[in-house]
Length: 168
Image (cartoon, rainbow, N blue to C red; front, side, top):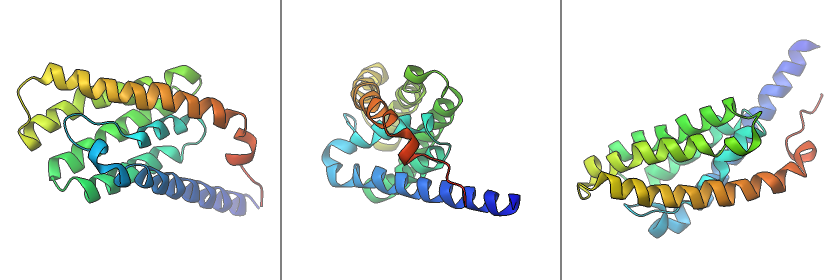
């Protein structure tokens, strides 16, 4: 019986991760002009608060970001390190899940500290790293702290329905 419960939980988490990845891609790629480049605003970054609800969100947002970067970027450094910035943010958000309004901090910090260097090295963006930290930071604060926290508050009302751990 426990084996069946474990298998059922694995399937549930895999499906949740896949759905989160798909939504991330759907909220990134169609908005390519604002999702990529030195000044970017990824609506999909709002999803990085989902580790508050489920551990499946960690691989979900990472894979979604990786696929989005593969489809929209084409530059290996951006694909690798941009996706790793999202993974780092998601892991630390999961670790802070007991503190609801702190889950948005790690994704903002990881992107502000990593993405400007990626933009500089991979794309030859201007040397003003501090300026790119500000522009990336503004985009992340709007996407994660504003949209992400709004999403968190909305989903919290339906947590038991959306993120329930169903028994087989």
